[in-house]
Length: 474
Image 1 (spheres, one colour):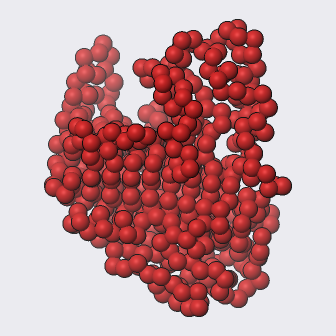
Image 2: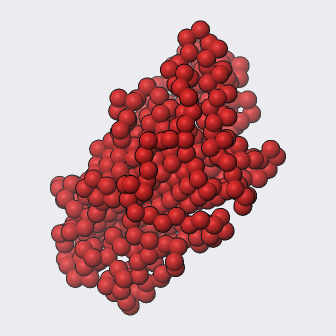
Image 3: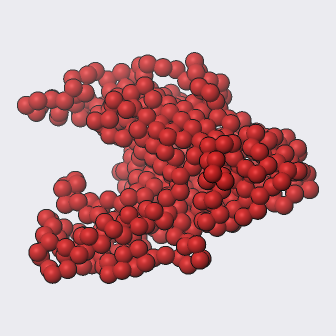
């Protein structure tokens, strides 16, 4: 790890790190010979959205010379996050090249056998009944051991790959190839954090658990997100790329019912009262459960009045579901581009936006280009017990789509089914409304694009890691 003692790198931390960006007007490229001042000047599309609320989001602005770090390994990244024993002091961490979460301090890449010698997925599966029915420790002599190994291995992998980002941090990728591979990046109660220009490849959970009672046929549950935010606030995630990368679902081992074992959890989950977040110009590709907002229907005591999040100019490509899936939050979703197919072999589209319990989603000018058998505007969203939703100006395959009507019909059908039960849930007794109780224009300034071709072109050209030309060295 190299640390700055001042000079151009420190000047960059103070003046340029917050303003690098690209927006609808142009894609700017800063030349290495230009220096930090010119890099800062090539800014388009400054921070907007909920991350500007409260105390605002400045990340590591004002970092001292010894709090500016360039990192190339997992050990260096962990040390930079600790920041010399003062983790919450303003700091700027610049990632160069690829950093693997499973990289041990001696450079070895750890695998399942390193975390839990003796673990065997097929033996673990054999301890369930036919097609994944109930587990029994006595089914085979090894079942009790495999159950214990799954738990201890999972905990060991968590200790290795989970890295927590403390408050007052800017985490920025250098150049066009900065990657976190299999890192479970975590923000836990941290505030004032910026993550930009990074590719985050979703961790592979070597020890997923099977739950026979999850859904109609049971389900695999993986543990690790690419980026998880728990009770975080004032966070800006910009020009990042998230996805399964080298480990698509189609190449996973075969599990029960002939389906692949799900080894990935979320790409970006925001839970437990997380607040004031903007996610902009980022790509979410090739993943099943992409983005969760809210912890669960029973977590309203933590989430009500929080989960204020803006998503704009993001690409959701081959994202099967949860793009995002929202409970409780005031979430603004505008100028995002959604593409995929219902017959994709690995990530068939199930729905785009999930309208969950007490969610207050303001959707504007989003473009959906879903294809495949049965593809229609119904795929743009799924009503999951949410009685409030508002959309204006969105399109399906370039034509205006009445998503308010889609949300209303889905809610009414779901509520009617729930009301037919002996004790209907409270949400089913409500009436659907397009009044979400808030207006983004009252909270912050923004300018949505109002043409589906412009939204598509802007997102495809500018979203994702590597679009910010952050040169090194100066």
